[in-house]
Structures are given as structure tokens and as C-alpha cells.
Figure 1 (cartoon, rainbow, N blue to C red):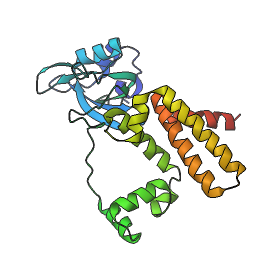
Figure 2: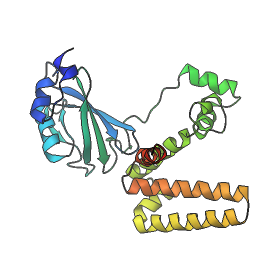
Figure 3: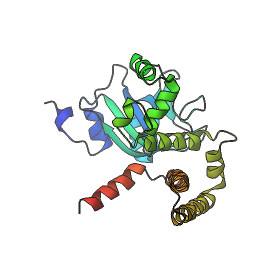
Length: 246
């Protein structure tokens, strides 16, 4: 195995020595939302950008078009707080997990990857379910139908966490989630409390339909609260797993 595959860098300097820099002195950097796990963008770093990222705790890159160092969010305010920085086995790609202060894309989109190419397998699944592609995708994610539902019954939680993260970053006018984020944590906490009370009432009423509806509202508002607090749902699930294994 090579040094890149076996050696563990502990400083920016050591990592810079391991990185397989391109002829232009650059390395690709994938940026991922540390909370929702969505891939936000891909950029490039030179050695100075890597150094600045480690020293400041915020993402810095090198602009190939402008031929200059680039502090993400310096003009837009959409800085990216780096929670972790790792590198792949070949040491030719970096992975930054960040807390974004706003949209990652210059278009104003939460992620630069907002366009998707329909794949033949998706069209085949849609046809076999007697639904259009969008409906089938929603059913598969929600676990309410379609062949994909059997693979991950909790897929809707990940999808919902991603949508909430997108709303947080883009703040589309008229969206209820935008309203909650703009009102702040007190409003979100109030809604969590209200929905928890509604769940209790529904349970006391012995109404499965009412309980299902109110429990869904509670889970949604709880996910909004987790996003506001920058706490990944994964960490909650890990805590449950730790308790289960005790």
C-alpha cells in the first residue's frame, strides 16, 4: 500500500504532503451538509486554501476561473463552517462536512446538484407501479408503495430532513418551513410542544387516524427543531442504537 493509503495525517502540513496535487497544484473537494448529508458542491483547493480552511474552520477554495483564493461566503455571507475534513484512499479528493449559513450554489439553490437525470430503472419502476415517475419516487421515499419501499422503510425521514435543510438554506417565500425558521427557535419549540399535546389528546381519544396525523406533525416539527439546532438525525438514531446495545 502507498503512504496515502496507510498514513494518517494529523496536521494540514502533513495532509498537504500526502495529497496528490494536480499539475495545476489543485485537489478536488466535495462539500457535504454535515446535518442532512446532502452533497452541496464540488470545488478545488490549492495548498493555501487547505491551510486557510484548517486554520479558520471555514471553507476556502481556489477559483480556477478567477485564478485566486476564494473564501466561500465572503461576499454572500453564506459561509460554510467545517465540521470535519477527510481524504480518500488515493489522497486525490477531499471531503468537507460543513454547516452552511445559506445556499451553496451561486444560483441561490441549496445545493449545486439541483438537476437530476431520470434513469431507465426509475421509468421502469414507475411503469410497473402504474404511476408517473414523480409519484412513484414519492411513494418509494414515503414507504407507501412501490418496490423501493421494501428496501428502506424510513427513507421518508431522510428525504424530509433534506427538504427541511433546503428550505432553511433557500427560504422560499410562502413556505411554512421558511416561516418557522424566520420566526426562530421559540416559535419552533412552541409548535413542538403543541404537537406533542395533540398527540396525547389523539391517543386519549383512541383515534388511530387522529394519532397518525398528529404524530406526523410532531415528527416534522421535531426535524425542523433538529435542523435549527444543527443536530443531525443520524446522531439521534445513534443514541437510540447505543441505548439498545447496552
